[in-house]
Each structure stands twice: as C-alpha cells, then as structure tokens.
Length: 144
Image 1 (cartoon, rainbow, N blue to C red):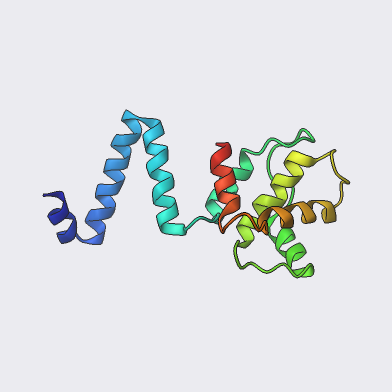
Image 2 (image 1 turned 60 degrees about the vertical axis):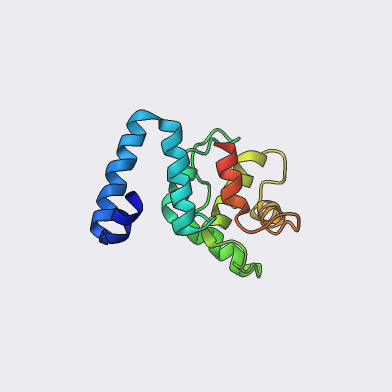
C-alpha cells in the first residue's frame, strides 16, 4: 500500500511525510535516526561535504593546539589549493577545507607548523591511490 501512496503523493506531501516520519524515528531511536539522516544526506549530496556539514564538522573539531573549530576558512584553503594547482576532481572545496583543518587538528606539533606541511598531508590524504572519491566524508563519518 505504501508504494502506491508514495507514487501518488506530490512533493509537498512527501516532504511533510519525511519530516514527520524522521521526527518520530528520532524520538524512538536516536542511532537509527542518525543512520537514516546520513543515508539521506548521501543520496542527496553524494559522498562529499556541503557547507552545512563542513560547518558542523569543524565546530566539533578539537585541535592539538588546544583550540576548537577550523583553523582555516574555506576561502583560505581554496586559495591555497588554486595556488598549488590542486584540482577539485575527486573531492570538492569543502572536502579540501575539512581535510586541511583535520591535518592541522591532528598533526599540530608533529610537523612543521606552516601551511605547506598541512597542504602536503591533505593532498596525500585526498589523492591517495588506494582510496576512491569521498574519502574525507567517509573518514569523518567513521570517526563519529
């Protein structure tokens, strides 16, 4: 029966149904809700960061230097990428920003504290030949 109803519903009805249903699932089981939310996210946006998710991920980042949050803005890391001929083919500018900030967060004090050190680490991480597209988001989700 639900298949027929979904096929006949208009977009507004489907949105209302999704909001209501996900709200019910969240109240009943937070873990199942998070799984459904990430499944839906990947269906809509693919396996890459968006500005919204990047902001959320950075706000949760606890850095080795004692600070919390991202060290570099999206504009700063995008500029660094362009100046170093990094092309956004298998990752986007949000994936790159997350990874640059991740490298700073995790490796501060272990490598020379300059942009080029973190750039090299981020580039190696994202351009890893053993990995496929979406590595930054997959890493973020695995660490959650």
